[in-house]
Length: 231
Image (cartoon, rainbow, N blue to C red; front, side):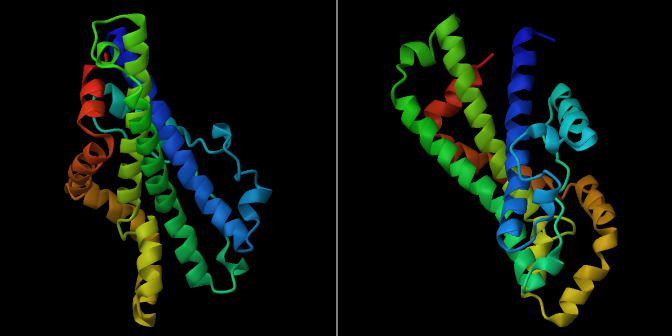
């Protein structure tokens, strides 16, 4: 494996990990604002990555996917939430659930906007120039920012799938009638198995296909071209 490929993997892992951590912190912060101090009392309302690492979801799975040159994905330790502290548990869980994907969407928009402004200051002679320290450094920076945009879009879309324990199931549950709420709660214990089945049957490929045009639209042709040249 070349040094360039190793650098790509490292930057991609940094990007996906930052997106995951911000997603989880958003859950905990909104829960805290609604009266649930569980996440704060357990030290999870922090951007310190060590507090959120899941050995499998945060390290092993993304690393294996990166080495196999597959789309990166992963997860952090879920932030503990106790809806009993909320005035309205179902409404509270709606806000908490929406906070994670909402954070990812906000980060994707802000990062793409910042990157596009930054890109205006970079001449083509450096952005698309021959391999040199300056051109390699600039392309590495835009690769990291671009990967951060892409993985935030991916996390937002994936987590809105309405299957427990994903955030989309919490959002859907709020809008369902009482019978529907009971049904969603009853299948929650089987949610992970259902999700794995959907993944193996190729259902998540729809999400991956949707990410590409969205991310490309956010980055723009010049940014995408620079990322393609990286490495």
